[in-house]
Length: 96
Image (cartoon, rainbow, N blue to C red; front, side, top):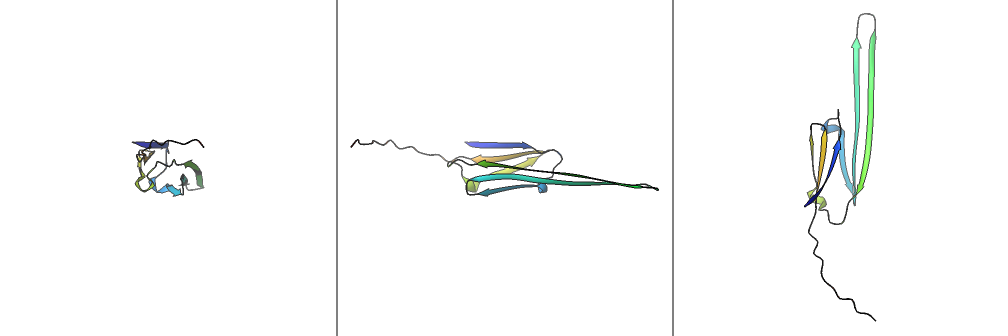
């Protein structure tokens, strides 16, 4: 009935992830920016954590692009790619 793509994205928020379809290419990308600040009497400490990813998939002809859906729960992104039924007709090829 459908294909599924699952990606583990620990520590990322739903807002950090982007899914795009351009022609027959599905691209999942994301970027995480996190800053920590620790201020004491004599000093101040700041740490920055950055990370990004990008992954592209070529979609088969049988995917219904307008029905693609995605869910993000507990650090797991699930993209559902519904398939359309393709009726194959029997055809005779004449030899010349």
